Length: 220
Image (cartoon, rainbow, N blue to C red; front, side):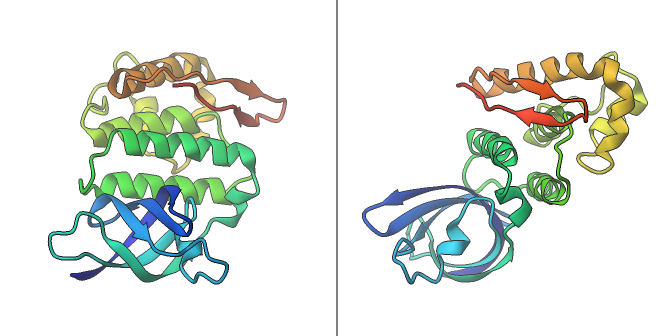
């Protein structure tokens, strides 16, 4: 069976000498594991489509009764070049991809999850600095689409603030006026995420005078 789908690369791992298994979150099929044959050869045409955070239009081939599709072609929609220049953004997205892989079964379709991921990539690619709100905004919106969110209750927070949180990365700067709520929301979001992933996350933030958000990673 041949089929096409748009998707974003979450992870890749090399197998054998030249092949690569790539985890892609697609529009119509959700998270899929895809075989990229011979992409580690110097002249491989599909290598760029297997790189982390690549947003592409992929062409797949799945054998009858096969478990893993083979990528046989496609085109890059965006490689988000500004993200690749910034280690801090790469670390942040590595955490995001881990969450997607941990809490999304294979072949579970979700347009909401896909759009959240794409909007985050577009946001990070468009701005030099990462808003410190990006972490709780991502977590709380993802948990909503995962099915254990809190969108329908403000759990003690101002309703207008709670609505802005759940708008995703659109107008995220509007959250800056709620500085006094940040620590509580941050702790709440990380606690809820840890509960569902069974992982202990350790985040460190360094806020410079310019308000720059520095993401240092996480521990499992």
